[in-house]
Length: 450
Ligand SMILES: [Zn+2]
Image (cartoon, rainbow, N blue to C red):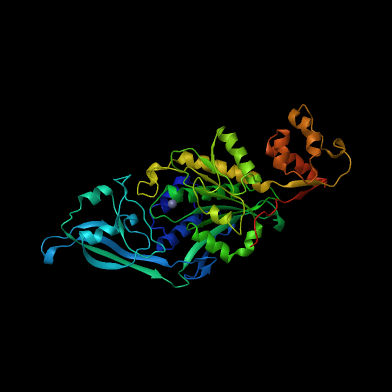
């Protein structure tokens, strides 16, 4: 049974408290929750990769399983009480992600290098991770750190396991929402991404995940017009997730015509557009058009300069598929326990979904019309004449539109050049297409094969 439609924040609320890291039991739980919200025809698929597998220049990490982790003051010779300082069960942020197992008694001087706090946000627990340089540690509020007795011994316990079993492995997931009608293979796919890792944090990037789910649902309920791209919604851990996925699915790369990364979009800050590495690609122009329409003046930045993320993989060396990103970065609660549901605003999630949806709808349904006719088309003979009393602006633009069917301009470009709404022009061009007067040339693959 699929869940009923619900506000975006409820998806977020379900995945927020989980111990989501590169690969973990809670990460698997989060993948299941996302699947339960996605439309069934999108065929949500979870892929599992064996830890240790070489993926381009990276290596698939182990699954990280934590039985328990806590820090106590050590009672001297069994006398007095030991006091629990912090516990992974209270908040997974207390444990440095991918900490090695330990069970050790230490003096304050020995313990201190393993404790992490935030000077900037003294009441919050910071998030630290040691994915690749194996070590261990705990995170706590600076206020709590300051209060800890310096003359006591401490008992640090981390019962963690690095699971290398291929079947348990490292996971990513994606679902493909199709347009109406038959899907032509040359049209390709648009890729939407967000990352699911980051234990018990809401904005980075469970907010992006929740918006992605919302956009997937909208595109399934109200599909793109026939002839549009498939839209693939991808979920997984940051960077290593997209690297491992693409390395296992290199044959998908030539299908990718563009991408959008959605990261940290629920906090109180203006939405920023981060441009593609190509900078002035059609996708940049469409994204700017949509942002301008909604906001007038809007915040934007260069590639990988607003919130550097998985677009560095998708739009990076040897792949180079143009990828924009939407984010409300920066925000002061970043990578701490203050990044929680309190800072997330439903209306800002909705606003992000609106913008993302509109960019995707235009980019994925856009194509280059190429004429098959000679001479001006006998408009009224084919029912293509537009009565100026019904649509004066379109009537005035007919000649200009018809002169742009040379296979040089996409519908979006034509709409911009004649100063009309994209959908007005697209609907009109579709009438020429229905009469066989134009053929649709797809948006080309502009990435790199190797
Ligand atoms: Zn982050």
